[in-house]
Image (cartoon, rainbow, N blue to C red; front, side, top):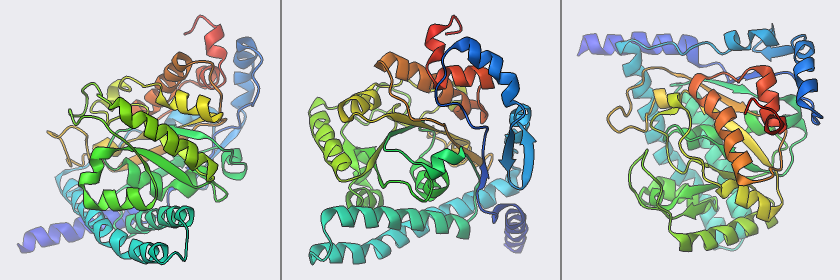
Amino acid sequence: MNGKFGGLILGAAFLCSHGFSPPRVMSPPAYKQHVPSAAKLVSSSAKQTRNTILYSSAAVSVTDLQAVSPPQRKLNQLQSAVVRTLMVAFIMSMCVALPVTLFPVWVLYRLKIINRVQKEMISLRVGQFCSRWLMRLFPFARKKVIVEPETLTEPQPAIWVCNHISMLDLFFVLALDKKMRGKNRRPIKCLYWKGLESNPITCLLCKMAGFIPVDMSDNGNGNANEYDPKSFKQMLRSTKNAIKDGFDIAILPEGQPNPTPEAGLQPVFSGAFTLAKTSRRPIQMIALHGLHKMWHPDENIGMACTARDMAARVYPGSRVYKDAEEFSSTFSAVVGHFGAHGTDLDDTELQLWLYGAMWGTELR
């Protein structure tokens, strides 16, 4: 018993020495908003390598982007046990903190002191606050955010799309929202699988924050999604109302956690494109990497905690896509690559995808 306790103390000391720093924010080079041709993109690639990336307190050239996002450091058995303990402590603390902090909001709403929209916005902030501060109290993950300055200073109404690699995704999106979208960001509503309501804590947060449920069968991660067509009509109505109330919308186009993120994305559904088209909103992409190394979607792996480095990449420029195929292909190529490797595509190829020029080239 004493040996185990001593081991945990040593492991905690290791984590304290590496994990209490705030999320690192890396600013890639500013991309051009209008790209007239693939040829100009290729010719401008060399010029962009002279720009710099702000990473922690260091300036790194664009050509060093692969080095800036190093491979994940594999944990030994002791480190893995400590990370798992801290992660479980975080989850258990969320189970206590959310009901306690959301109860006053519910009381104010029931007394009609605040209206529904105010209740949802406050509940969202409460969820973000709890996620952010409990991750600092239990630093089981080393976090990094990669985002352009204009995304933080000039946020635009958008449909936000993100890959889905772990059951931790929602907590990290909540905790890092300010780092990813800036202090002037709009409040956001997430689309979620209705089956999550079987958990009283996630049900409480989703209901209080006004998140939008989508009904589908519980057929296991990695298997084809089976949606209830009737729920789509209600989902579209709820989304339309949320946009009127001043919210952005977040959606996971894969529809379920991806059990093999190293191999790229699962089939991408066109729901995000449909929402963007009907709401006349552009789409903006976020990519997550590394969270599956802490809590894997594959139940046979689960909380193996083989690494603790995660990264969130916010791609520049919200965009209106011509059709669902263009969106699905772009999302799979750009977000799928970052989700698998933790780094962007080659700079020239990335720009071709982000601004639609790839559809006019033979590289596709």
